[in-house]
Amino acid sequence: MLELAHPWVLVLLGLPLLMRLLPAYRESRDSVKVPFFDKLLELSEQRPESGAMILSRDRAQRFLVGLMWLCLVLAASKPQWLGPPIEQQKSGRDLMLAVDLSGSMATRDFTLPEGAAIDRLQAVKRVLRELADQRKSDRLGLIVFGSAAYLQAPFTDDHLVWMQLLAQTEIGMAGQSTVFGDAIGLAIKLFRESASDQRVLIILTDGNDTGSTVPPVEAARVAAAYGIHIYTIAIGDPATVGEEALDGATLERVAELTRGRTFQALDQRQLQQAYRTIDELEPAVYETISFRPRRDLHWVPVALALLLYTVYHALGTWRVWRRWRSARAA
Image (tube, rainbow, N blue to C red; front, side, top):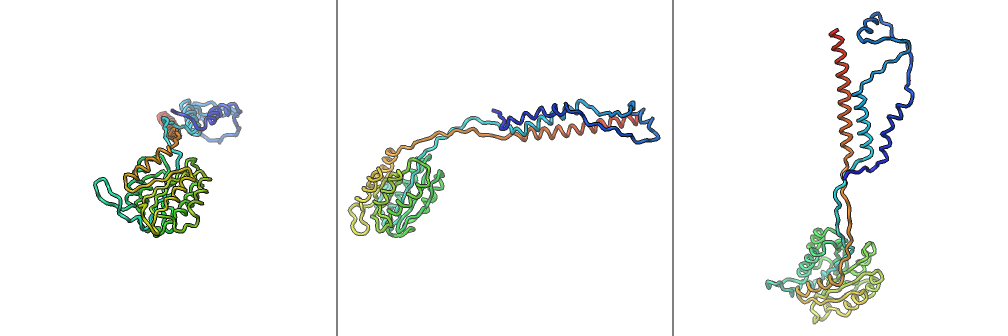
């Protein structure tokens, strides 16, 4: 479909007609006196008159000038070709993943379907890659935490880059402790800068908070005020004791305050099931975005005007050459 971005420019098409209604500028001057004036009259077949002014008129050249003006006005109106409508579905959900990178994540207590044992972080990465493949319309972010919380990947639609940044995470790169209260605080800051109405934070940890600046429960209350739903996934052994003991009560309280839910994942199958349940509890809300691609065509009338300009001068040159040849023949 062809349309003009500035159709009002077409009113300039009538400008030459308006100019033609104005009186022409004429000036009467004595011509140069030459001894062979009579011969010039014979060659030009003109009849001299006092104060007369003879204008060269050629219909073909006038027609070309008119076409050039039409092309220039059309170019100024910016013609565009509109392609067929393209519709895209985009999710309004921002999903932030907070992954524990403390030393206990190196425990090899997860088993693949083929029987091979892998550590907890490898199991988390495998499931998160599946999640990214399934949630192509979500904006994903990634926080890693240990002795401190760090932003590994801001919210992005580019899931390939997100998975590359996930693959670069290593156990211990954020320290050996577990401060998931600070991870919640960092997520709150990022969600505050987000325009999404559907905000989901998933925390994966195998221990208990060992000294966050803001306790996890207090951070959860702030998150609830910003409409953030927190889902906690405990991937440690609940029977563990000591500093690495799993604090299931705190994880449940954090999820409860933010209208989320807590899951226990002792193997990869349970971890996958936890993500499926979260996906069911937090269905994505899609919005349809429609647009029509535009392709500028103003260069077409400009190129045509240049071609007509060349023809115009070629025609004028041919007329001069024809008169010169006729004069020589005479």
